[in-house]
Structure formats: structure tokens, C-alpha cells
Amino acid sequence: MPPDPVRVLLAWEGGAGRGHIVTLKTIAEALGDGFVFDAALCRMDYAGEIAPLCERVFPSAYLGFDDRRRRASGNPGTASWADFLGDLGFASPQRLIGQIEWWLAALKARQSRLMVGDFSPIAMLAARIAGIPMAAVGTGYSTPPPGMERFPTLLPEHARRIYDETELVAAVNAALAHFGREPIAVFSDIYAGVTLMPRTIAALDPYAPWRCQPVLPPLNEKLPRRRERGDEVFVYFSTRERDDPVLMDVLAGLDLPTRLFMPNIDPDLAARLQSSGIMLETRPVPVEQIASRSRIMVHAGQHGSLCMALGMGLPQVAFPQHLEHLYHARRAQELGTVSLFERHERDGEAIRQAVHAAYKDTTRADRAYALSGALASELFGDISALVRARLLPLLD
Image (cartoon, rainbow, N blue to C red; front, side, top):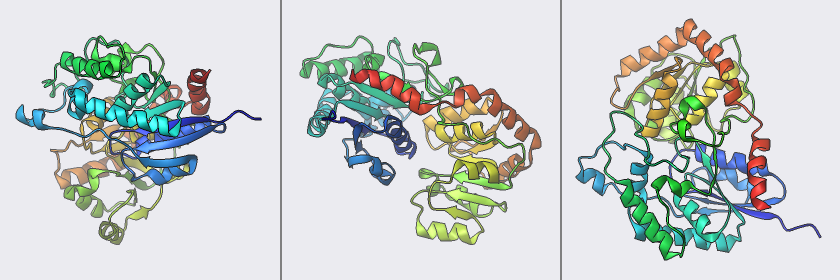
């Protein structure tokens, strides 16, 4: 008789973007036959994209954001990944224990032999406690390495920390002790013993100096690059951008050939934008079509969008919606092909002029094309082979 297939639990514990689902779907497709997948998702918005690969898809425990300490401290911006996890429950042993218990029950119920998590740090602790191999995927930003004495500050203007990492270590160790497991020494060691598979490039990775293992390329296969420029503005807005009236007004009045993909767009907003001449897509657009039609890309500074445009050699305009977007967009801006508008920079006419300038700028277009060639070895790789090489040994 053939061996029973290996059951894999795909976990997504926090965040809002579609990219988390896309990453987990890529992992499942890379592993392929011989595996049965279940997906435990903190948001079900994009569950339909991964459901065809899974036996079951169900809502998971999630990282609830508690900003009481941050508000009491004057609401400073998040200084580090440790500070961010503090807001998400890592300062509370009781919160950690409750969430770990949920993941332990899920692993047992689904008889999982491997967990793969995107932004799933408490699920990661549960896998450690259960003795199940765990792989962490995501961007470099969300998949830090162990062994750092202290998490680095991510943005210089947000340097004030409201959590001491020794406090977070104490909370984690209390939770580990509850389940009879050994303590950690430094907070970054919550990632110890995990197969880390961040998909990024060095220019966008805040932890590049501390990594011992190579990162994986962010793109699965080489994207088409064209010296001939298309004539469209390709816009991808997937989260809170739709709630920004200035951005929506700019889109409606852009007066350039514009193609928009906005998952789960409100029907009234869709009708308004279509009436202004925007070509509205209702499902993901093939990259070959984006490359052949587009002159520039407009998005929120998501890591995946930045990398896709870098790979296709397209200039970009980014409107970050939170600090992770801002970090990645700033790092990409340093490469010379990205214009950036922060959340407090919402002058509609200035935005419109910047998009038009990027659309017409042949010098930036040439720079973007050259940069895509220079970064090709970092951006692209056989992700199926790389994933299998990292994960299959965990099951020996």
C-alpha cells in the first residue's frame, strides 16, 4: 500500500493583506502531491484562492491588537518587531497560553505532521511545544532570525520602545513553562528551531546582517521585461486604500489609461471608478499582461508589489498604509525607481502630478529596466525546488 500522505497545516495568524494567502498557496503548490493541506486563517477574505488546494479551510485564532499601553504612552509609532509583537499579545502569558492551546488543538484535530506559517508567531510556539516541524514564511520584515540580542529599530523617526524585551522573554518563558518546555534566552529566539524561509532581497531585508541562512527569492519565475513601454497605469489596492477619499478622487480624475485590481471592491466605488474610464479587473491580472500593457505601477508599498514591479522593470508610485509598507517603500525608493507618498502627504493635486511625472519620465523608465536586470538573480528562482529542498528533510 502507498504511504499515507503527509498532513500539513498552513497557518496565517495576523495581518490583512492578500499576500499572506498567496505565499501559503505558493508553498502548497511547491510541495504538490503526497501532501494533504489544511489552512487555518485569521481572515477568510481570500480563502477561496487557497481552498482548491486544501481538504479544509477554517478560521484560526488570531493576533488581536491591544493598543492600551501604546495609547497610554502617547501613541508612538512601532519601533521594532519586538514592540509590534508586544502589542499583539507577547507581553501577556495568559494570552499566549490561550492562543497556544487553540493551535495545539488544531494540530491534533487535523493530525498535522508539519506546520507552515505566514506571520504566525504564536502558532510557531505551539508547533515547538507539540514537537512538530515548523517553517516560517513571509517577507524578511516578518520573518526575523534568532540570536539577536535586541531587535533593531526599523524607522528612525519611530525609535521609542514601549516594551522591554526582557519583559517579553519573561512572558514567553512563563507560557513555555506552562507546557513543560525549556525557556528562551533572548526574545528573537522565539524563531529558534524554525525553518525560516523569508522571500525577499537584501535591499528590502531589515535583518540581512544577522541571517545565517540564505533568503528565498520573492518571485517564482522570471517576469517579462520590455524595453517598449506600455501605455497603462496598473493600480493594485487591496486593503485600506479604498477608504482614502483623496486617493479615490485622484484615481477617478487621473486622466490616464488606468487598469485597477481591487479585491472585494464596493459596488458603488466600482461604478464610480468605471464611470471615470478606469478598466476594473475582478480577478488577479496575469503578469504577462501587466508587463505588456503597463508603463508604471501604483500600489500601497506592499513587498510583493514592489518586487513584482522591480522584476518587470516598471517605475512605481507607492502609498504606504502602515509601517511595514513604509519601511519597504523607503528601502525601494533608495533604489531610484519609486515615488513615495506617506499617509500625511495627501495633497490630491501633488499626487496626480507625481503619477503623471512618473508616467512621462523616460529616464526613470530606463533606470527601472536596468535595475530589473541587476536584481534578477535575487528576485527570481525555482521556488518549487527551493521549498522542497528546505521542507522535505524536516519529514525524514
